[in-house]
Image 1 (cartoon, helix red, strand yellow):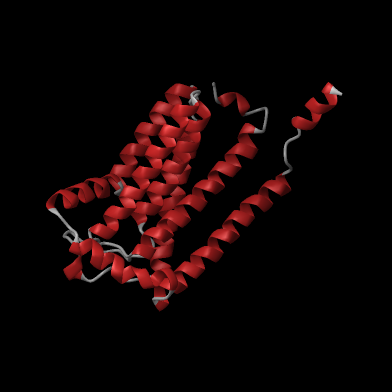
Image 2 (cartoon, one colour):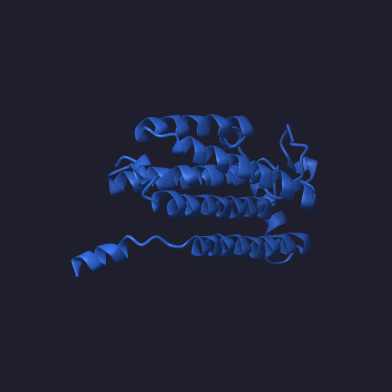
Length: 235
């Protein structure tokens, strides 16, 4: 009976079930993303909050708040997230004695940048009016927020790896709370500075989270559930 349980518990999902799970995530992403884009274009639903949210942010700007917003915006920029990704990859590679962290974080970053460029050019949405924005204003399109998308995807995978590596439940929870707060702060900074609408940031959270989920699902079922690769992590 015990042997039967061991055999049953060690059974890995088939390649077909993994592909179906990933496909379901992608289709769900596309469906919600489409609804959000329609709302943004029509100014209905969540899109109706774009202008009031921006106006409220502009009306409540302070010198201290502006400095904080620029700080988080800089950390969420290409150079900022590249630096964070490199540091996280290096520490996790050292901790696990494996190259898997840099492979996962690197592929996540490459995919999130590709999604950002593709979606911006497909939607071609204008940024908020210049009088509302603080200089310097990015020249790319607004939808989605690239800062938010890339931060969500990269730090989502970093959080997943930390859950695997850290032994303390408290340390895991503290790390996840810190990462989520950091991503939300980046999203807030983009609206506060007048560089994005609310729906741009929400779309960045959605797309980035979905892409991170795809990477995590593939790694969990293809790598960790495969005994040939499971030894990569040392906990």
